[in-house]
Length: 552
Image 1 (tube, rainbow, N blue to C red):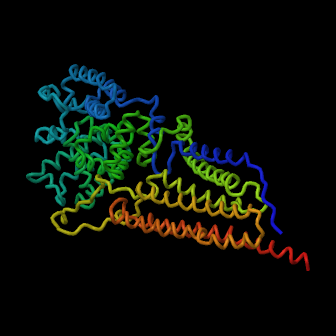
Image 2 (image 1 turned 135 degrees about the vertical axis):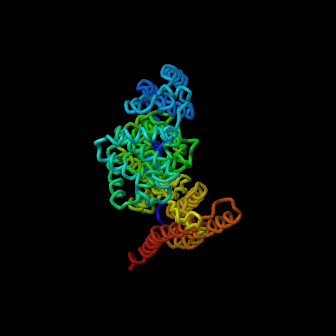
């Protein structure tokens, strides 16, 4: 007695499900949102309609801030802003109209009673502010003016002049102490003129009062060193504009560090701080991501003020490998980033689920009386696995450790400067990395196992739909045991191939790429033999016993 052949109809809905799943996954991929990076499409949307660097420089020119406008002009040239020629002409016109202000970077009401600005006509370019304050005449003039101040913070700063317990500075009241004296007067004048952000002003006063109480500069000395570093590079107006956007001494130290380690990029770094209104965010971003972050900041600055603000708000690198994305969705991403990232990952999951359900109905068991295809639960598990792989493949910074920043901040102790000690091992070197070749290898091994999986299911379907007796079908299934174990052979072969390629240097050394092939192979064989072969054999055994049971 033979089992009747299967006569199911072609499931029209199956290819529709596959196509819908692919389209849904592509739509999710095109959303310009990432977990640990930001896409250029999102930056373009954020920068659309916002002021450019050149337009911001024009605002500075209109405010008669020559020094900040000059650095902004240099940054606009670096990003090839189309408005650079117009800004150049405006700045040149302002400089020609007020040549005495060029050296100082702009007009300040506190400067007129202290310095005869007309004596500076010989200086035709921006001049570091400490070049003016270092002379004895200027220091005496400043000290006499500031001594009349009623500000407690100014008086506390002036009293640090008499402290003899210093670390790296020569005491200000001794021969060779002119730099420290000039920096103290600079800090006091910035405080008096309200050129400091309120949080920075409070920090500076607290440190000065603590130094006077302890009769040593202590923690105030690094702040003076940072002011010295910036005062040797920025003019008066440039320094004042920067410190108005600096919220604490930590940011002051980071910005001074950036000015030392990246002097050629100082115009872009400075202009970004003014452009975004926060030196803190700029310093934190560059200290974290180094030259890569500087390149991303340059890209954002070329797109507009909104782009810079968005990049610094997210504090993540730019994913240059992302596609152009759905422009219409970029506005929603800016407003609701967390919701959109959830929708993107749900799109991956639902798209993969629809593809596997469609393949189940289309290829594996279309209309079969015996359920040999993928149950919904197993389709969900496979969809979850492949959705996770899609997330890893489209998130380049998810598993890859960020490289060490070239601008990372180092604490230098004077007593240890000359000490030769081996560098501490970097923890970042031990973090797992995930480069493109590794992802491609893992994806290839997974695709091979999926193909093997569906090959086995097609063979089971072929045996099931044949018109042979159950015992013959059972013998045919036993004959295909090697095929059903094929996932293990493919997995072992993939692991061996990956290890050989790593030794030859074709792909980056990564054991995850190699042993993932074995893992996928074990998973494939387990699914085939436990979830498909065993139930089908059990049914064949029962069907073969049905005639004898009926006869008895």
